[in-house]
Amino acid sequence: MAAIPPGRALATDLYELTMMAGYLAGGMTGQSSFELYVRSLPARRAYLVAAGLEQALDYLESLAFTPDQIAYLRTVPALKDVPDTFFTRDLPAFRFTGEVWAVAEGTPVFAHEPILRVTAPAPEAQLVETALLAIITFQTSIATKGARVVDAAAGVPVIEFGSRRAHGLDAGLHAARAAFVAGCAGTSNVEAGFAFGIPVSGTMAHSWVMSFDDEVEAFRRYCDLFGHQAVLLIDTYDTEEAARRIVDAGLRPAAVRLDSGDFVALSVSVRRILDAGGLHDTGIFVSGDLDEDKIAALMKAKAPVNGFGVGTALSTSNDAPALGGVYKLVEVERDGQRVPVLKLSAGKRTYPARKQVWRIVRDGRAQHDLIGLAGEPAPDEGRPLLTQVMRGGRRVAPSPPLPAVQEACRAARAELPPELRELDAAPDYPVEISPTLNALTERISEAIEGERSR
Image (tube, rainbow, N blue to C red):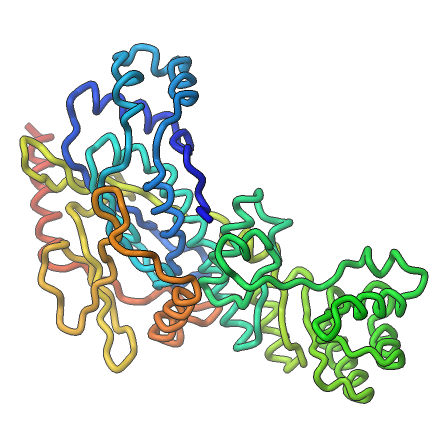
């Protein structure tokens, strides 16, 4: 199932279309290269986990304007003076024909490192800016938050529970995917299970318990239907009493769920009650406004918890809900020649030309990254992070299965210095600029300054 439906060409900012019309009207259809990256890391993030590439490629492969969309664009005041051929020739024929280089999903990345690079005719490369930023930065935000939550849980399974708090159904769907990439064991989102093959998990609602006169009858009826896979929610009235009544009724659920209260004290007392009743195999699942800090505190207290459900904090990345992602022009075609370009805006300077990022790994541990020109020789022990994933507007190879992406993410994060994975780690991983790229940047900067001073 395609996660990005066709016909999303209008999922963009108006200025992408006005610039596209300008390029076409001016005959500026040479190749342009744009790179997507994050200028700085959010608070309490020492690295990011790249995600969303699959949906970005879906979008690019399906990109086209429908007749209804073209008819609408004719009514947009900002486009009323563009040549009629924009509507009769250019938009009907529009397809993405470019190439894409990208970091594999699940890869840890740092500030200023290109996550994705597009090279295509200028109108194409420009139009896709808004959508690519929305897709990549959202899923990267959630995957990064998910990695923190998974690390805090220290091997205890985490289920993503956040669809009802996500900022819309599409956000919930793709948050579930990004969380799985980061290491979550499953999701409550059934659409994500259908679309991506993510294991789905669910328990029961308080409303089920409240629909019966007797709490035990609610538990019994649920167990009759779902058998040994039943997970019983036991905090509707009195958590400890509910655990006792489960034991006394001879029920043997897979787990009980705590959704409120002092999770440390309650998990200890419920574990004691279950064990005393012979329910050693019945697990304790905890949910309710959890995040990485609360989970870390539960783990530190050695709470006997067998699983966590994390909702709002994960599906919205609530403490860092947006990345400052940018999509910047780095190279243009002029008179048949590729020309590296940069901007000198205060606080927003860019590096020119198409780039590669190498990760230097020794003895299984990442030492530092090097950003250099795409054509530079690789440094010793350097592993390139950007690979070509699209050529001529089509994928160069099938995308890997999502469980393989999750495993690759686990392995890549395991290479990071352990201190980077602490919840309050300082973002001090070394990212260096190659001498060749530095020299090119200085040369172009001096040329621009010299031209401006004339």
